[in-house]
Length: 232
Image (cartoon, rainbow, N blue to C red; front, side):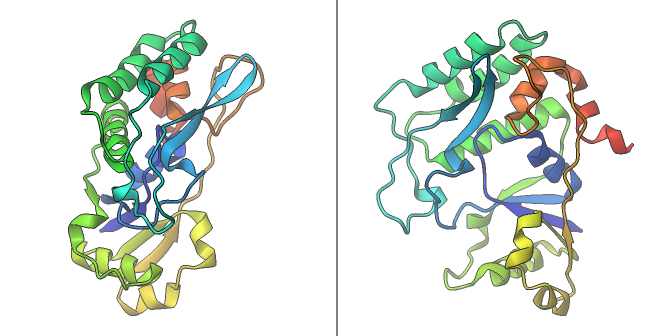
């Protein structure tokens, strides 16, 4: 069994969903420290003026707070603002309505005063369904981990709880992942390789790292052809 563990992102890029699909079980790492100014609460879309951040306002109370403790700041209508920005910049895309509906379902149908991980989980689940990804998704907070465990120790604990023999990681983890410790527990480390073709896109020069909603708005149900079907 192959398990992957990554922190949640707000409307992630297409590689995030390729990663999920490659796993037998995927875990959202929600009970680790929230990192300010990171992908947890923001992502980019394309506009005629260049890339534009969509940022979810959050209450950043202290540096040690966990992702699952990070509350969304509902003092402004950020949801309406994000929907309006997406509409303004993608309304001429061939499949704008399909992408907008995915965004609306999570932004308008989920309760207010969520934590950022709950919002992200809703969006990630909705996008997975649209892309046909059926990988089971769990939260790391559900495993009752000892808070004193270090990075690789946490990974090993989750993998063992799920019966994993393979751990899929992002390439950036090579700098800290203790591969020998994983192998001693009978877990083989693997690193995800991200490589994707360009697709028809609005607003000038191609940008591959934007939210997957850009891909969906431009190619609709053909989105998987530009993610994993390249290898099938």
